[in-house]
Amino acid sequence: MAKKQKQEEAPAGSPAWMATFSDLMNLLLCFFVLLFSMSSTDTAKFEEVIASIQSSFSIFSSGGSSIGEGHMISSGISQLEMFDDYFKSVTDGEDEDFEHQGASDQQTEGEQSDDGTLTENGANTENGSQTEEGQSPGDTSQQNVGNKDISVAEAKEALKEAGNLESEQIAEEIEEQLKLHGLQDQVEVDFNAEYVMITINGALLFESGKAYLAKDAVAIIDNLAAILSDYDQNIIEIEGHTDNVPMHSGTYENNDVLSMYRALYVADRIREKTNLNPAHIKSAGRGEYLPIADNSTAEGRARNRRVEIKIFNKYSSDFGSDAVVDE
Image 1: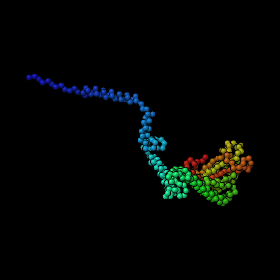
Image 2: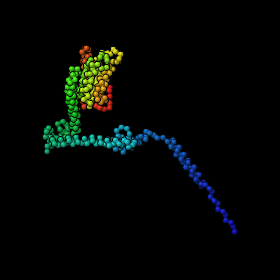
Image 3: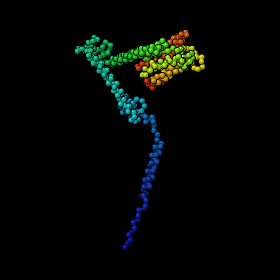
Image 4: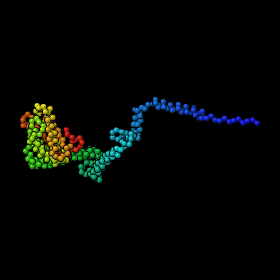
């Protein structure tokens, strides 16, 4: 009887085709890595594609692609936080124009009689004829512009009048206080729509060519400081002025520097003697450039050597961060 042949066992390890497949995958990986390393992005073309997409799908008119300045909408959600403000400003402007147009239309309709003629100005608007100023009844754009201009002018005039009234009231109060302190003959008080100005002759405050307060001037400034302490909600500006005679002492370079130091010392004394916010007190040197008298005479030069203290009314006081620093 013939013996059965012994079946051969499969070789140990992975099949032979796995080695070929692994080599193929490695070659493909190297191929794609090589392609990626050789590729380059054309930035200009990429930006053109982005701009084209934004122009087609923009939420703004005329293909707008950004809100305000800076980032595009597609750059991230941070820019979209401003969208509600942008949308509100746009819609508010449209609503305001609509209200103006509706009010103008109602006014026009109220002036017309049943037969299509205007009852007040007598201009016939029947069959689309124009009014006496060459406008059709439905054309209210120029009328709206005129109304806005008048409103702005009236607002400015009202603001100026209110500033004058408050400045006048402050000036009267200061004059009363000057009389109580016996300073009415040593200073001058004037006002306009922006401020009340107290003018002090420089001869009362400083020695010739000096910026430090004279001994007798300290009491004058202290009394003025007591008066100014009532105006803690107003900007107070101290300006130093000189005549046009050149400086001869070596302490200060010129009249500009001298006037600046004189104003600064007066301002520092007022800060020291009052509880006013130091940031509300400004000082500036104006030199010889704003004379109030003729510098060719001794009397005129004496008037030009002065210190001016300006108390701005509430309509002109600006408490911004850049407006209250010493100059």
